[in-house]
Image (cartoon, rainbow, N blue to C red; front, side, top):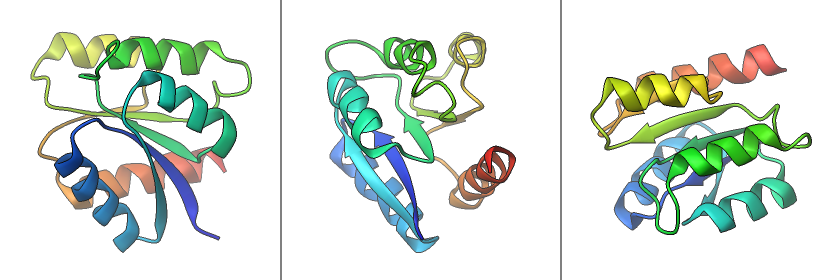
Length: 124
């Protein structure tokens, strides 16, 4: 069975790129364009992992990360941050809030897939 990966990304081009990378490796991408949608999809779909952009409309990705990690039913879902934000501060803050990995856009597909596979192997 394909593992579902929730991709929280408001930029259509970035979503298309990330979903193509995921599909090429037999993952099933699910899209959420903002924080509210992200929480709703996480609850209903129970993805194996979340790819989270930090620059989202209606609240930044850190809020989504905090909500995911603060929810008993969702806190075990690994969150991988994929963002255009160029900052060690953003990376350390993401890791402190429970992210398992941090990627700056543009991502290297092989590195992203290797990280997802590693995270899912640890989880499983």
